[in-house]
Length: 305
Figure: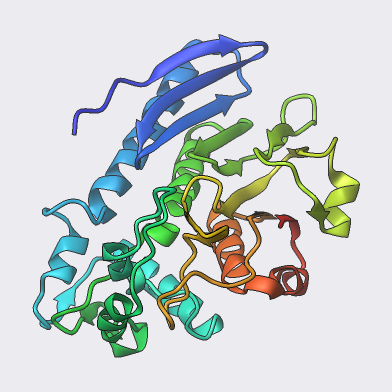
């Protein structure tokens, strides 16, 4: 795939850099005046995003994910970065009691959330369920062994991880205030020069809020972040609709069906983008208990139903 060169422009009192990666529009907001520094930071962020995309994309045939998914049951030794992500996925699987499972991507072959009414048959789903289950995978760092008909997909944490990695790299070079936004997954490095935060807007109208976030919000769907990560999960663009029933793209890996009673969207503010992302996803997977789950985590959040 040919990627367009990053673009940089001055907006108000900060620089905005834009590029495309991981099937998403990406932008870096930099609270600085120095154009040369802005170009350097933009280039670093773009390079890191593309590196992670190339390394962990399930659509390539030349990376570690392809090797694992085509290992025919043999053990594959992975590098430290991949091992850390697998450890994180393992932890999420265990803490969620199987709700978060990186082997559930095979369900994409029958569920295509394109806004149509094409609901797969139960028989189609049933044939895939034996291919799902992280507990069937042998993961003993640094070696991983998958049954021959199973696959892993790190898409559920990959973009958020890329945001955090990019933020950490940029901060190693220049400790300035930046907002890193990869397709709506966000990390703010530190307060702006005047001590304020970056204004973040939530696309859809929010009807339910956590008490803490309501106090911090500026208006119905905007709030300021001085430091930390923000992520949203929802069915605004990926869903099916049949006989008046809306089917969310959030699938329960144990049943193969969309989670019942899930919110339309969940936005979470946490210490990192990766943590915000997994919490918003797990909240969706908890369905009707999404708000209760998030309150137990003691994080700022919005939910819409």
